[in-house]
Amino acid sequence: MKKKKVGIIGAGVMGTGVAQSFAQKGYSVVLIDLSAEILEKAKEDIFRDIRLQTLFNKDLEPEDPEIVMAQIRFTTDYELLRDVDFVIENVPEIWEIKKEVYHKIDPICPEHCIFLANTSCISITKIGSLTKRPTKVVGVHFMNPVPLKKTVETIKGYHTSMETIKTVEELLRDIGKECIIVNDLPGFVSNRLSHLLMNEAAFVVQDQVATAEDVDNIFKKCFGHKMGPLETADLIGLDTVVNSLDILYQSYQDPKFRCCPLLRKMVDAGLLGRKSGQGFYEY
Image (cartoon, rainbow, N blue to C red; front, side):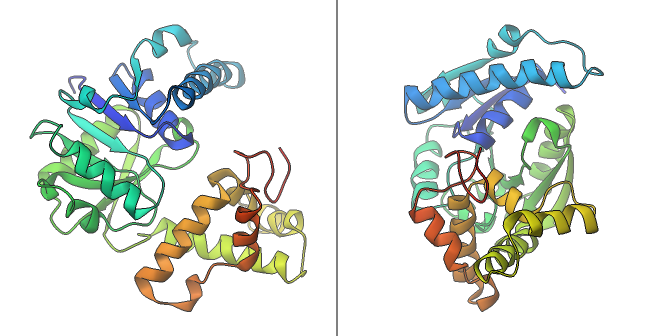
């Protein structure tokens, strides 16, 4: 596939991982966020991660981080999306923020540009309704850490065309990732299941049935999972987990998605997981 230009909105954990994955495969990347400070941290994180990949995986060919970094334009200027072929949106799971971003990029991006919404719970059909190109809006739920995960949950909205799906499958295949295509309802497959586990695990800790460590050890040592649900919550960010649970609850009006009060209390206290240095564990 001829390398095309990719715009990425959001330079948090997911956005930097997506930017790194495309830059390492030779794509020209425009990475956008709100401030120079956020973008500077993204630069540092990508540079460090490329070096660590080589150190910890001897099977990989050594890469010069400077060469990869040269593929990425770090900017706050949305106007640089005027010639991109794809936009991958990674902003927080808050509808008003999503809405503002899509209203901004739709008139800027070229007509052929496909929008890939890296959302964990919000309906792709609903996101598509914010644009004049709903046939070119598709969900791509990357898993964390993005450079290491080889599979992407890919969501077909009501209007998403099969041409868009095939183009996105080809794009992701080119960076070494397989698509699993699912239909569109809030939470899709992965988060309708995973957030129930994380939420109930938090209830178990809140009810003093077990410690966070014991809950996670049961998942790892009894079920064979690589990470426990509370370690996963810390990795994702507890604020993101709470936002996603709220979306699931609002979407389905089903009490099984009622957010654990302990999770909400931890978020209010600033205990967000890895990104704040403390969540269910200290980092």
